Length: 324
Ligand code: MEV
Image (tube, rainbow, N blue to C red):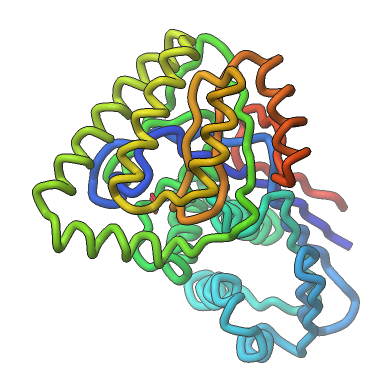
């Protein structure tokens, strides 16, 4: 029986979230935690879907019935199945799909994008479709739109290609690093709603056009400067730029008290910089500093009830292996 396992990394936005939705540059780094999707051939003429993190299992005679049964919150998955049925004439029979993720859900780490990318790549590898990474990313983007409304496309891109990228208006380039960047990632214990956060910023833009454009422009400039500091491996300056980006995100209205509290703890205890990552209004905070500082902070913040971990970058992006 055939079996395929695909993995895609999560991500962290170092600079430029929200502004990137409006066409400004942003910098994203793929992190070492992944989502995975396993597809295996089963003897029964049916399709099974196992969602490990939510402990859910669905079983139907065919994909059409499965799509009908799936609750709205899994619309991303049904969109994917339908898309492959229609555009590639795939029939999901004798198939078991298992999806799992190491990422906090709705927390700014790209869990939905990395699941989407892993699922698309698993289907690609299982059915030997020979899709390129760009095609995998494009399909994942269609799935992202279903959940997030008008995403910039940065999440599916970084989860597909890995590494560190400069992203703007659906185009990206890799940023070569002179030194590995470790991030302390701290969960605020509150998940967020990306669609709502994007909407909030859009409303702010409608009511404060000039101010908003000014903030976006500054964020864009910080992102470009951050790109240089990353190339040089200058962590101290990188941290300072992250602090500036955080201030601008506060002005956009997407930070909150818990994010500020975590930033304050991180900065008081030696981090070079700390900011929210992703949509904000909850989710995760990222901090940079010397390795010792990050591991010290990890203990400290865990002691205060904030789940956190030190992440390395992922330099591969989506990948899959086939097992006969
Ligand atoms: C991406 O992780 C966060 C936002 O910039 C939305 C997007 O770019 O699609 C807020």
